[in-house]
Image (cartoon, rainbow, N blue to C red; front, side, top):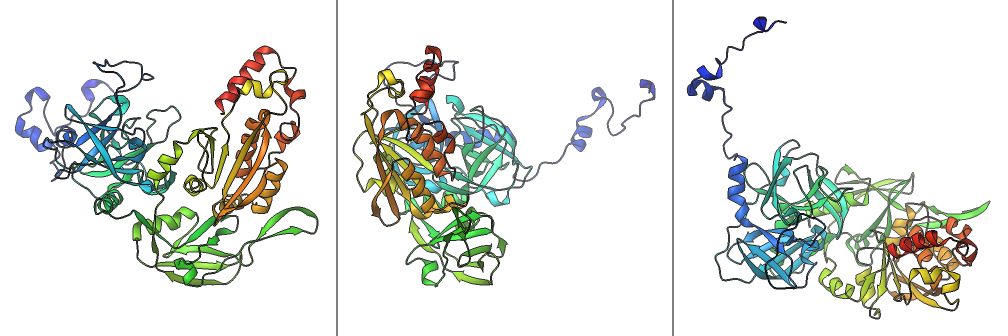
Length: 535
């Protein structure tokens, strides 16, 4: 269509002839209480602080453009209480250093940890300073946030303090496993969030904090448009509990749950718990078929949770999420006895139980160094100091399986090459298990504790004792050149998998000389790097 024939928009004349009155009539009127981004930044940024690295050397430090270099800031926080000089940040930020430094304005001050809530990855700090404190942030309502609404972040990504990002709420509230357990009600958003934003604020368009930035999901290590933040209402409840001098607690029914092919099964009922006092019963047995083979779980006497407060229950985190929001209020469970049995309802009033003491765990962890790739199911540690019995419940606080080995006395290269090792050199390996939590994990693969023990027996790890309550202990003296492969096998077992491939390769309980003895030097060098990376 020729340009002369284009339809004309007559709402407004050409820009050079448009009056201010005409332009004003076309503008969208501002929504009461809504601020523009510049106003939000000016209002909130003074109340967002940077967590600073403790310098080992005196003197000025110059910024490097290499993001692999040490950064001057490694996290963020925000002012919660102006009068008491209270800062809130993530626990994974605060636990990095014994000495905590907080930058407020252009000055840096020491801070101490008043309390921690591992469920929310939350730490409450008090700053030691005489200066006037910035105003506390304004608290918003995360439950009122809708998908598509604009949100903003302020923090110290990659050490660049006071960085402002924007995006939208990009999904409904999420539940996922975090560093301190299951995290519920997480606000999903795509506002620019990078390492260093942790502990900073997520803001709505009124300049109110609706969440604390905590997690980025990324394969690159940086922003990929997907971040999760802890809702501020849960944060505020926990902070007030800590400032009130109380022990952080959480509502509990005393149930351990497992996701099975037949539904959400009750694996364990803690003695004296709310569920136990109400007479709730659930039992899982294991049977072997007439044809032999591995034992299979039998759920005839097992209670399955089908609904929680009228909502369908599919995952164990569904119960945790419900308790986190309702607190001490009674919970109505709809259950089914057996895979296809009778349905019934029961109402339980939760107990308040103490959360794991992560400050104590932090001190215990100073006695160990990482000894392998850990996950939410299993943790690998190497002793720096001797393990004490009272350490074990703390180590099992957030993982049902823990492997503790003596410190290595030689390189991985020497452990596996025949000409560089002694066959009588052995390492003591201890395998600790939280029985009920471990059963919940193994049941997802149709396995049980007897299967676990049979696999450990093949690896040369014998049962020592039940150290305390539900804790099991297995131990063995393992040839040094098998330790790396043993760790791989234990990781597979902890996830309900049979390490048959390692057995077939002769790497467990056999002699790996046939596999490794003829390796050319360049291959042996690559293998050494691989094994060292798994230590």
